[in-house]
Length: 193
Image (cartoon, rainbow, N blue to C red; front, side, top):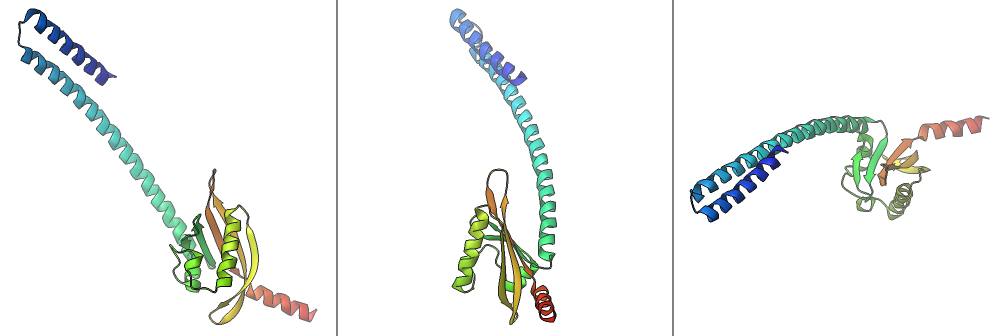
């Protein structure tokens, strides 16, 4: 408010000096202009100082928030990279944005890729794309699948769930839980019963 008041004063002082100069033709017009210019300079300087303070406050706030976000992201990455099962997160464009260490071990680095860019058989890619789209449409998908891992057929429970904020779906998270041992035990129990 003070800055705007100084600008208004400078404007009216300039107007008054112009009227005085043209009416009486006395006094130094240049002196009047210098005074008005000085007042404008002071008010502009005051405004710049306030803007710089506000900018410094905003930069400090952003810095603190950025640090908190980085710490939170580090925790999330640490958890995801160390979970003992195949897990990934994809964005709404089907690009993988996070993957667990187990996922990396099974299929290699998939970050930034889509399922269509992976070196997998077409029928598997088609199944993945269908399930991923179901998750993007809001459904949590549960499916048992058999995959070859290190030359051995293994049973997995695949769970794909939507990731959303309040307004829209942002992507999906997928988990492959190895249930091979459970399946073997169930089979063994059926044969012994």
